Amino acid sequence: LQAEAIDTLKAASDADAFEAARVKYVGQKKGALKDIQKQMGSVAPEDKKSAGMKLNEVKKAIEAAVEQAQSRLLGGDEQSGDPTFDPTLPGIRPRLGHIHPITQTINHLMEIMGRMGFEAAEGPEVEDPHHNFVALNIPEDHPARDPLDNFYLATADAGAERQNVEGTRLLRSQTSTVQIRVMEQNQAPIRVISLGRVYRPDAPDATHFPMFHQMEGLYVDTNVTMANLKTVLRIFATNYLGGDVEIRFRPSFFPFTEPSVEVDFYWDGKWIEFGGAGMVDPNVFRAVGYDPRKVSGFAFGLGVERLCMRRHDIKDIRDLYSGDMRFLSQF
Ligand code: PHE
Image (cartoon, rainbow, N blue to C red):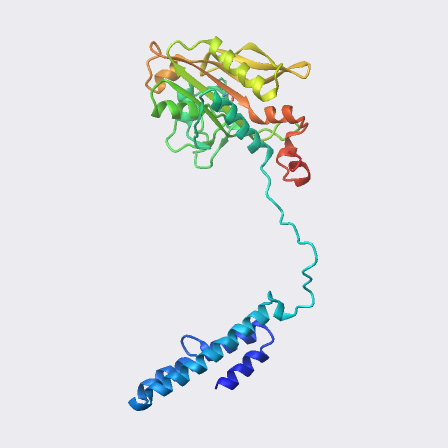
């Protein structure tokens, strides 16, 4: 048996032949060695010792042949003498992963805001109308709730999107939802940012994409003022865009802030809008069970792609989501 097994294993020229031979001789269930082992019970007691030793010898020899055949077939060691393997050739460099420019931007923004004491908070991308609209003081008839401006999930009854129907879900259209989630679960003082994806059904062009990122900020305490808001945003902008950035507030309207402003930074010789901000509306405080007579706060929402594109002089938002490594690996 030993000679037969060793010959067969030596002759095995591919992985299938090797596997068949291995199963035949040393297989755990039906292998020839196992069969012999089972017969050991019927050997006369006085012969047991020598028979056992012999069996062990055969077993070791066959197992060695199995190993040899295996390393011969799988290659890898010098003994295989593989003529196509040249150890003097330079190796092939493994392709390393690359952190996406938007992820890099997010990490950078978290670091800057973190130095001012803002902690990162998160919320779900699939939201209910309560967090995306109602608690943010956006009433049922508000155009922001229009199905044409939001990605409602098919779970919503047709035509029921605008009502606060149980079970209606949509992809969040703004990170302001996280303001509500944070205040629902924490008491003031609050100092958080939330960086994440938002979704709006815009046709893609150089400055629009149906998915983009926002950095939401929320600061709630006693006696928070608009001056605090402007200071935080100015410090942020000078850190992110460079030392000489100026900041400008233009009057605006958001249902969840009062007063509300558009935030512009003076950058590269012109004023550029980066997002919206304002003082948290008393109705928002009431929606989360805060007493608007006791606390005040500011909130802001900035476009992450816009910040990233300005800083790196990227001209087309679609480049960020093309998956083209020639573009992405530049950052
Ligand atoms: N959520 C607003 C938007 O998406 C931005 C904003 C955030 C405005 C917080 C005011 C306060 O346009």
